[in-house]
Length: 392
Image (tube, rainbow, N blue to C red; front, side):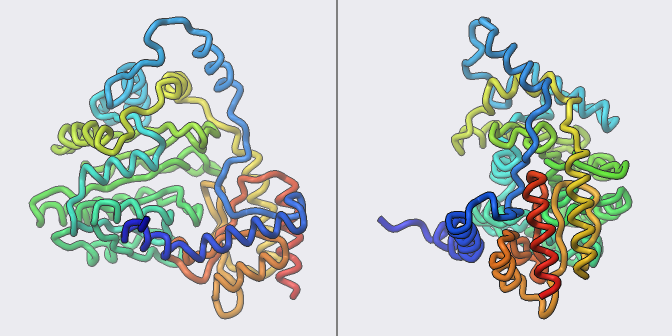
């Protein structure tokens, strides 16, 4: 039976990425998976910290009746209180449990949040380069993505954002530390964005939401601190998951938090509670909510990521690649050599048994993304492949 036009269009726009993925499968079947440097996916190689396993065992052994039943759609009250207290301590903003909605990962949180905000024809500003799924999340609600390029260091250009805002603008999505560049936006960038959005919100007579997608907040290097947008703009929304900082990507647990200073915070919270039901998410998983409530200060050790980042940066430098040094996440986003054809360069990489993702998939052609959340063996193979590519 025929599929929807919206899904057909989505499949077509992503088809070349799918072809690269299929090429990787074929390559592994041909030469063996252990001979391929697969840097295509941001799937953390680290195992969860010991505290995660210990707490899971405690929860599994808990005979308390009702442990696995439905709870309020926004999430377990005690978990939301724990998250609110954690955020209040980190930001100085008086979050309460009714400012927090527990979600099925950050992706689920973003989709429900956008349902709560968007009408058909509305616009969402995206700062390129960005996570490829954002455009599909926006299109789900017949809204439009407006793409604004960052500067040559992948930092936001507040003036460009201001020029992109129209009467249909409902939100701006930022992602710092950034996927795919690894760049961390400094506080002055959020201050500039906040000033632009304050002025635009006042002019339009309704707030423009600043949605901060932050699953990599705790994956940073060299003492870098990630600013809190909530300290720079009152209509900010914090979206995150525990996929990266606790190495739990398969568990799909996260949350959305609304700045209590926003006059729309209560309405958005209610809208998300409804949206969870309407979209079929219903609740974030009960066991995972109980798990993360007691682990809000626990993090994976990023030393291994830092070492892999250093080795790949050295290999890129030796090969003459131009790359902005990432301060967070676990990605490198070098410029491709030659004519800047990133898809052709990806095919060259496949020939050398190296799998990377073209920057075109992140609205930034001419670059490729390397994900180093991989094993040491995979980094070894990648370093060797980069040397062969550079010397060709």
